[in-house]
Image (cartoon, rainbow, N blue to C red):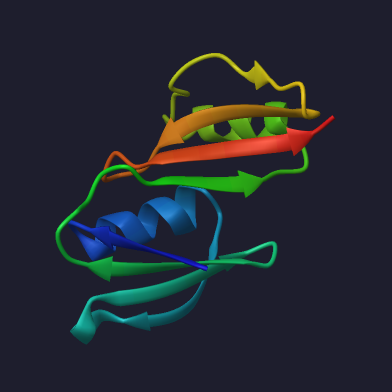
Length: 107
């Protein structure tokens, strides 16, 4: 599980829930906290000061299909899809706070 500090809990929650498709498992608006889950991965969002240097990675079943779905929601990749020698394809997008989010599939 990873925890991200976010500027605006509602905005970030909407991005990870509605755009990326994670399910909300717990929402504590009074304390500025949300716990989300997707394919066995958990992400905690905590209202606070946004820090740099964080990159999240999520495995997807089809990178092309996921990028197409995100594109329909106005999300543009940071660059082209990268193919690694380790056997995966990956692309990066940005969340509402500018954090890098890597989406990858094994090939």
